[in-house]
Length: 372
Image 1 (cartoon, rainbow, N blue to C red):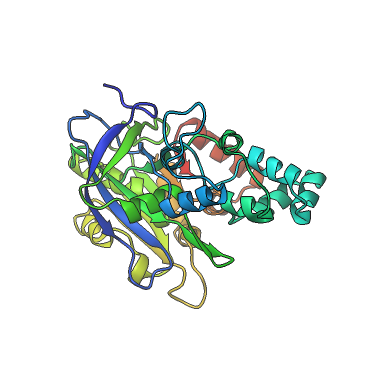
Image 2 (cartoon, rainbow, N blue to C red):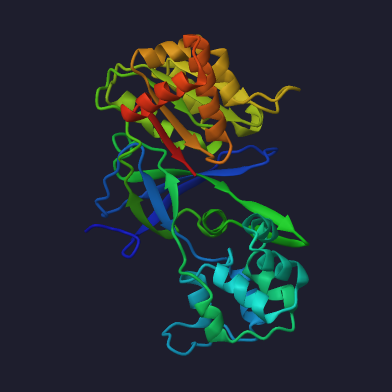
């Protein structure tokens, strides 16, 4: 059986643990998922698709706003309104269809102005932190037909998480490292659809819908003698735990170097014991840590890269593969800029030469990103 988004496997959560400390600004959890008889086979670098259920409080608030009953079965549907909003539709992020419907049927001036200007940046700023209920409440006198409302939604989407285990070590489990997203705005509390579903609704023994998402573009080198450099701040460390477990199980002789960063060592050093053991056992030959809030001047992984620029460049020259995992918007861009800087400093060359150097790394599939 090939499990996929349309036919997910119903897996049991074997264990779940809070990784971040009491004083951390992040809520990061480790999940161990039992693969049962699914016959799912995964490799380091792959991701797991998780199909969430929506938050019950938000569902009930939307149903109340629609002046409907949870048990109502809308025309043309076989399920109750509550079941549809829990399992079938995205109800956190508003679609453009819903935004334009609200705009066309209300006189909310700020939204009207943004839409009229066709200003995508201003619209993104207006939308930031708001969910569908917020848009419905821009004009609380607006009556929205139930069936029309459902046409303004999109199907619920799976969320993909990098796998943080090796199948050689855990042949019938998949481990995930998930940051629970929560925020507040105008006296309301919000949460990421899947991350809060996992943290708030899924205890040990709970069942969740999953499927494998292979990533052939983020693989360990086939030649196990090749060195690897892994750059993964925060939950970006997840696939590198998988990489290290795999390299250890395979007795790979290629050297391993990890750059990990977070806010504080006391509260945010994910997989601290496992990483320390890898270093002690010489599975991890080099380890650079950057805890940005542990000193007056903030230090990030890219700063540590530059501190090690001579060794870093020598590893690349010796055939190292560079892997980057984590935030695409800032971290990955900063790491890429620092890579240019390191190349220029070591080759005493122009920016154009460093561009060509990095292009060649990508062509050789030695500069690989898994960013989101």
